[in-house]
Length: 258
Ligand code: MG
Ligand code: MG
Image (cartoon, helix red, strand yellow):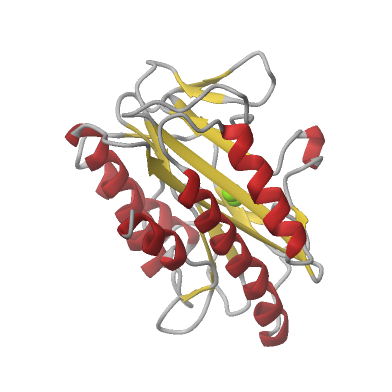
């Protein structure tokens, strides 16, 4: 069943999505060689609670932390640990919050220090694929139009588009119907209607599309050990133009001033 949101509900949810963007900006300030993902997690959790919200991931199906931090070949669902990040690493930081009964869920992949041109392109293309996919998220289009657009763009660079993990509806639950694959056929799947709120989140691999799960029961890694990038925005479906609920603005302000 799909929970279509009223205008008022979308406005409440936007607050949650914006708080995620601000939390990720706090994280961005700390990202440099030597910092640990547990340190990032601690700052994020404090920031979320200081803003009268609850970390959305902590305790979700038993997940231990407030952030998913996925380094290099880790695709998503990495568990924060006390290993320092190194120059040239990339780290996907995925964050969820629950505030006023609604979830926000957004992710950004950061470069740690200086990354290679090859990896920078992976980051740029993955983020751009998200923006292109989001443009398709309007009344009258279908779910498949989003995935088709993301897949076509990323595959034109020879990248692998992860199949096993997908975007999702978002609202009073962290994961609602429908699923939002990052691959697919044009004009296929659910027809998009006003009030639908989606988390769109391409997970794009430098190498093959195949992934596997580590023995920790959470971390997803690429099958070939090559790096993977992940960006996620929350959007509400509207006529003509997508309404973006989350933001990278604060994050990119921090990155620009580093
Ligand atoms: Mg997420
Ligand atoms: Mg998500």
